[in-house]
Length: 116
Image 1 (cartoon, rainbow, N blue to C red):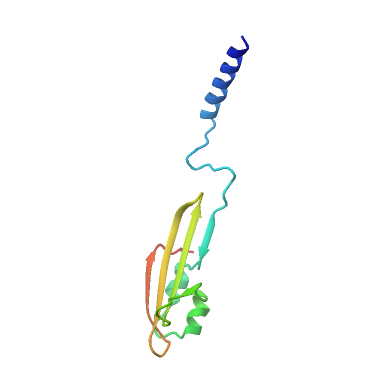
Image 2: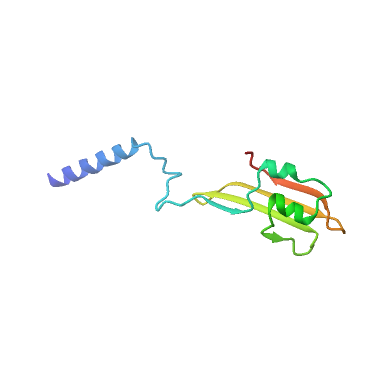
């Protein structure tokens, strides 16, 4: 008799869990805070970059890069990654190239830049 009560109770718990609306593919325990890494650059900042700007002017618009390209001192690289529950949600890379006079020569981007 006691086994029957335990089995029925477990069955009811399983059925009620299915009706709870929790999406177990996205739910994690313990809770994992969304992580943002790198330089956060908006579309407005990106559009403010103009050919001929000095390094100081570029740094004033988008900030200093987290890392500089090791093999080319004339290139600044801005990277950004956003994770939620250990899954990559968004990322982009922006390369800013300077000429021999340390003036902005070109800007290349890959990925979605944020619009504000």
